[in-house]
Length: 182
Image (cartoon, rainbow, N blue to C red; front, top):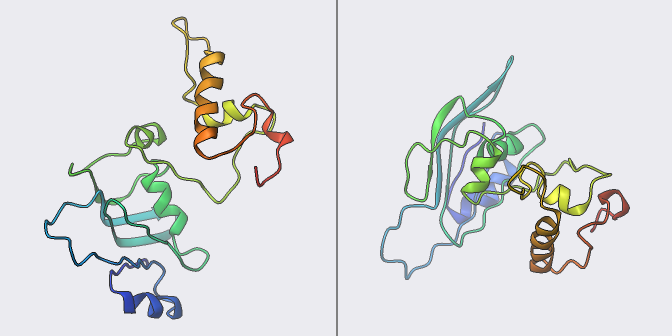
């Protein structure tokens, strides 16, 4: 079962207790006066798969500017929780709040992307033969009025994203030609 805590001392204990699979170390600023609603809040999240309760009662709050680590044993539910946040899975119970809106439904990955939520999964689930651009924009390529992919725009947008992360890879290079580090 996943749990969370914002107490610094709990983080150390969290790593030593097998029953605790999620911990969050957040240092709060002593200068924070106004209580701003969290950017993201997942409350009472539960997920079941046939014959398995992945987790129940999971709460997660993330405020703007915070960094969290989701840690735990294999099978603890870390990836499942992130899949729910990314719209890959739906929670069986619980609510998600985002930017002050309650009961937000992240029905699929496209809606998560509209919210600005993007997840880099630990599994490499990219397509080898297609280009870097086609992988970056898989399922959401810019299209022309008749529905054809706008390749010049696709490459231009990919180049902008690659520049943001200082990658010198050409957008039209087949992904299978790149090393895992690229």
